[in-house]
Length: 209
Image 1 (cartoon, rainbow, N blue to C red):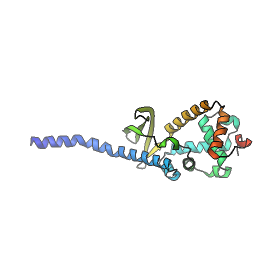
Image 2 (tube, rainbow, N blue to C red):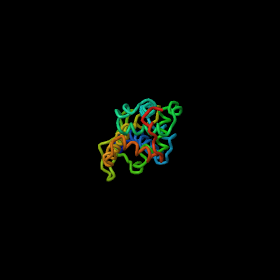
Image 3 (cartoon, rainbow, N blue to C red):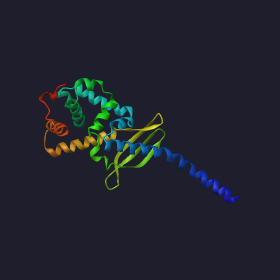
């Protein structure tokens, strides 16, 4: 009897661990699927794996491309300015107007604008779960935890990624790159437009299409 009680007690202690492990595995699978989509430039898969808020952010970039003049573009962050101008440089007005936020995410992934260069090394650790929210800490190349996290939200039974933190890392990377070139922000943007498309931007790139 004592053996049976000990066995049942041990089994009960194990239950919360098992119950918590399954959702965390789902979060990890969601991250793995997103990373795979980035590495393979699978825009359709990527847009299914991110939150509506993330899609709204990218729809906002398309709106910037459609509406902001040079003065307006200079008021937004360098990385947002670059993304908006890349969209303006590569797509005509009619297509930009008809794209959903998810479409913009998919296009950016297909073009390699979202994290493809660093996706191979992107790893998460120290996952945490809190109801329908979860997070994973972005690991440095040596495996140490960074100060950045990726957030996940459960929507309709699926764990979706919030792209806020990745976009923050992108902002930091663009700021650093611009400083390294010694160019003004505007000249840096023009250089990146040519580098990203293989075409020099026209003088009217600063005006809405």
